[in-house]
Amino acid sequence: MSTNDTPPEEPGAAAQRPKAQPPLEPSAGPVGHEPGPGAEERGQAENGAAPTGYVPGGYAPGGTEQTGPEQTAPEQTGRQRLAAGLWPPRVSRAQLIVAVLLFVLGLGLAIQVRSNSDSSALRGARQEDLVRILDELDGRTKRLEDEKQKLDDQRRELESSSNQAEEARKQTVEKERQLGILAGTVAAQGPGIVLKITDPKGQVQSDKLLDTLQELRAAGAEAIQINGVRIVADSYFSDEEDGVAIDGKKITQPYEFKVIGKPQDLEPALNIPGGVVQSLEKEQAVVSVTRPAKIVVDALRAAKQPDYARSSSS
View (cartoon, rainbow, N blue to C red):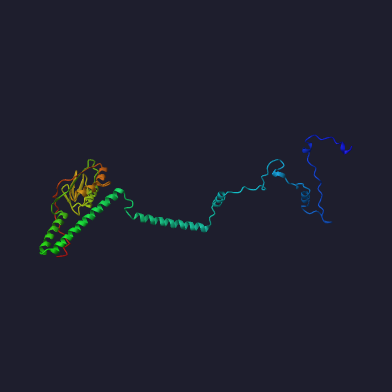
């Protein structure tokens, strides 16, 4: 049967039938030499055939996509490279020693700064305490300036007086009277305030009365009497079973302070925020402050003769 008698093919059969590939022939080489490795693949490449084991299109024979090492890994972003470089941390022994030394140095500096900050008592004080301290300093400064002015006046009087001996005697008498008031050996009168403390709950103890006394002295009190007891430089307070004792003398409530001084300085010092009045009211005590026209402090203390101290002028 001749080749021309081949039955006609159905449409589409040529597309389904695989193309016949030419037979592979060994590449011509020198006479007496066998084809070397790779000659077969080169021949297939020259004839347009795919090498043995080659899978076109990146798909395996089963139609699945290749996922082997031949696939290129996706490129990492800058943030991923940074994270990979930082974690897990790679710390050498030298770096660890330096980190420990820096930690010890920082701890020492922090302790030093803390100790320097705690050295100032005013740094952590409340606002009302700072206001009270400032008022006390202003009052003390004013009193010192007044005293300096009086001393300057006395010096000028002594220098200008024709009878310096008589002027010196007058000043000595005046100084003795002032010292007698401070020592409690003579009575005193003048402007001031009366502070009365009523303690129905019995919560006010000697420390609260001592704080009140110190506040009055800081505000410029010159003479103080509490329930008939004259307060002097060496007065002391103690708690008793049913009250408080001053210099060993028991006093009962209400506690009445008669204070000679400048009322405009004494009363505000007691009523400042966080001051004596608020502190006593926290103990459920009733506090009242009045300004009589004249305060009389007539409780006296016996003058004590010193056993060892003598005047250096004698």
